Length: 133
Image (cartoon, rainbow, N blue to C red; front, side, top):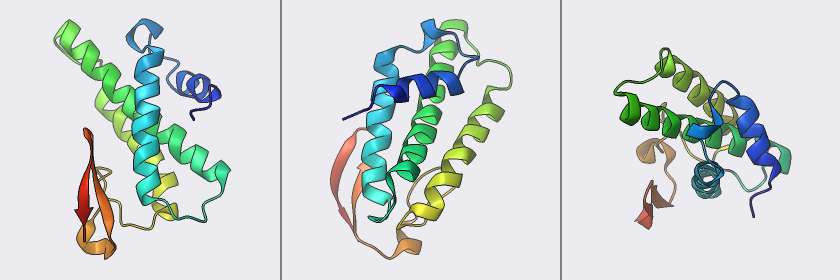
């Protein structure tokens, strides 16, 4: 279950993004996607506070990517400095995820299956579809 306080935290992190561009549904989908990914990669001994930081930072990144996509479709271009901001948000997510993951996580937030040497159910943005060794 997604804690309602996470919506507040994500909106707080993205306070410069107009609310009309980021609905609660978009945030919920970002939280759900981040939660599924973290279920696959985080060590089982990660404490709840650290997991929440991983979840919020990753969902914030996903939400921001959605925002830039919506703006680009509407205006024909992305907001100034959005690439740099997205990179900073991704790096924050990586900062929390990497030390707490059972897997090697690439800079683009994909799993390095060769470097990880673990079995995992493969995850895509459209869902979970099989096991990879």
